[in-house]
Image (cartoon, rainbow, N blue to C red):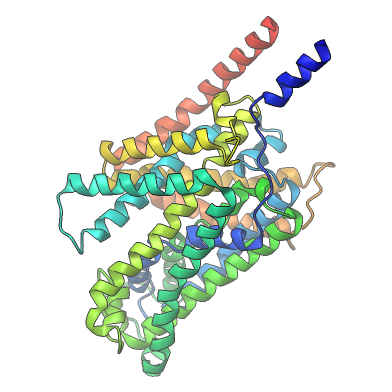
Length: 457
């Protein structure tokens, strides 16, 4: 009788396991969907200004994409070794850095994940304001509505959310393909081959190329998004490495194609000084030239919606993984009995994002998010050096020249960390530093509480 009671209690306990329901298409959709966002709209002009000539600008995007590939290769190896939900948190934990694993999850919850949702929701609302001018407060309510819509999409089904993400990612690529496809037939080859620096350029040659490469980096960030959901990917040992590598190639192809067309249609001076370079390129093309402003606003909305959906889908998995390990509130490990999604983690993360929408500005959020995200990436790439020395480290796929690739990834990320202190608003940086500084004390308090609970039991 006691055994039956025990069995019934176990059977009726809430599930904390998520099922593998997503294929390689979802891996690519998450990576491309997260990466191809608002960054390309702003970085095209920034890269033009940094590079100083059309040829250097084109090379900058090509080299910038190629040097980002090592980052994706690092994630591909780590994901094939540990096909679990949680991404970076899992890699730190398995490397033996439990406090660092906690810190990763802690700052994800307080400093990167909800702010990223807020940033994208506010950006979409601002572009919608192009069509219907409304007050700043109304725009914030629109941003909240967007968060709630995609929260419900990803609450109800992992498979449904994956299909939607694949659809919206495919849809968001089409405007880029349209501009490149039409633009190829209206280019001036002399503009591309012109290596003469534009007026006012202070750097040339290798120095200009390095400056241009640095300016491209934000456009390539986010390709490892699917690693957070490795525990829900079918046949992850094959699909994760393949999906992440394909993601890098797709993003590289899109950006190089767009840059090739842009430098063949507009002089470098115009690209560098334009606040909306993609809209300016579109305005020079037949079919879409007369509605370039509207077309670009629509394009931006579609592109950022894909990124917003992706973030709401994958980000809550890190708190879910931590809660399963007893390093976060237990409720975050709850899985919905019908929808089989980490519903509590999704709801709370979106709730925090909504609070941030009303509590701060977009520029402060960018500084807050950026510094912490870069620190996490830098430390993640360093785990390759630690894990490869462990006997029980057996990734299904190992990247070639592993230490070199990890070193390149760390160098690029470290460069960006330094540059963040130059451009980011001080309020955002202070909040980021506070989030990091409170992480380790919180970890030791958490572990102390866990020990007390264990001794009581």
